[in-house]
Image (cartoon, rainbow, N blue to C red; front, top):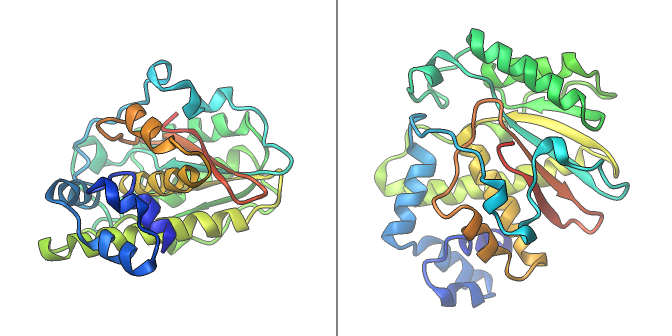
Length: 268
């Protein structure tokens, strides 16, 4: 798909790939990943939670990237929709720097519950939430419950969404590239479905997982790049070494009436 092609261009294997337009060429480009791209895919899919969470250095990011802190965001434009994408609070696995993914359905620990409550309080100070949802993992549902308790949205809680689940844990080396492509497509599909849950001028909050959320944000960036020439270069300057997502970190994507995605904050 064109979305998969644009996402590949965030980390192109060669410059000519971004100029290809047919579905056949795009499919070939997606699968012909250079070793360095394969390593990045493997890191996204299989990395343990030992990566130290980092916040974007906002002052160092190009001004044209238009990324800011959540507390500094303006209200949702009347013709746009705001997707507030959060990572769940801390679990014991996170504290011990152990991977959990889909293998262990851990609950929030004491610190994680406090983070979830604080997250709910922060979001309660922002625009009203029309929808609150999460992945089907317990830690994500508990975090979403805390958000809903802090601010009762009109349509309250969605049922857990499989399209927000963490990436697959067990991927054999020969299947990494295929799994990464499938994860990217799921991420883009989730963005489309989430914005359909909102009306213009509304905001919704969904809780997911660090590895999958990084893919979702890259998918949003790829979509924004379609509307803003040069955005890919801005993205790579702002995140030269990639980025991690903190427990209870907030990221926002606005969707215009024309369906254009715009990253507003990352791990705020």
